[in-house]
Amino acid sequence: MMNNEAKADALALKRKTNLGNIIFDTIIFITLAFVVVVTVYPFLNTIAISLNDGYDSLRGGITVWPRIFTWKNYTDLFQTPRILQAGIISVTRTVLQTVLCVFCTALLAYTLSRKEFVLRKPLTSIIVISMYVNAGLIPGYMLIKNLHLIGKYAVYIVPCLVDVFNFILVRTYINGLPDSFVESARIDGANEFRIFMQIIMPLIVPSIAMISLFTAVNAWNSWFDTYLYTSNKPKLHSLQYVLMSFLQQSQNQTVSASDAGALAVASGSGSTAQGKTTPISIRSSITMIATLPILVVYPFVQKYFVVGMTIGGVKE
Image (tube, rainbow, N blue to C red; front, top):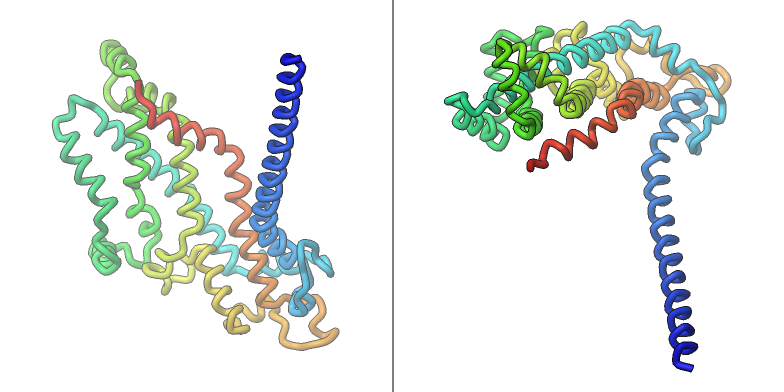
């Protein structure tokens, strides 16, 4: 009799537990689905507007699918010399800044991770303090001016050669490597640079991939340095700076005279404006062009991103 009651109680408890799990899983599913919709909808809406007829977009009501599909917004953009020049500047600065910043940051991290280096601790402290105490915008501008980098392409590269946050990540990663690798290479007669290039670099690939992603995203999305240092040099304008300019222009529903002819901004109404671009369609198209490269690159480095963020902070 007691066994039957115990089994009945266990069965009732199991059913109650299963019901609770189902309710909890349902709530989690609904919450995550809501988050996904809220996150993805603006992106899909921007794509739809960029692929929709410009004049028709002024009517509003576009959700995630264009009403009148057209490639004209993109073709007009790629036919604009300003956009093409800005795209070249953004691509080249992203590649150069990523390669040079990652190399210099990793080299500095390796140097200051060597226990036999006498100035390791004071130099590390000075570098870390610079991450917390910023001189400010005006002293930074005066420094760039005194270095004669105003209005020059090098202003995109030189100030970004070393990133303190990335330096800390890479140095922590290197500190977690066994010292026997370096000692064995020294016994075989390898110098420090060769040890860094042939021993350390292959071992810290996850960390390198992670800081490469950080650097590339920051370089690609940067526009404020263009505004500060090269705004009077149209040939050095980045794509993000051009995007920011068009965003401001679209808010006022105006474009500059030089861009109006190239972009064929709609100025009429009815059928005469059909098929022409408008500020809202141009804004969406530039946003997609500026965003797409990062979306394409990120999946390939995502696995390194996760590994690099965790393994560098674990020491035995």
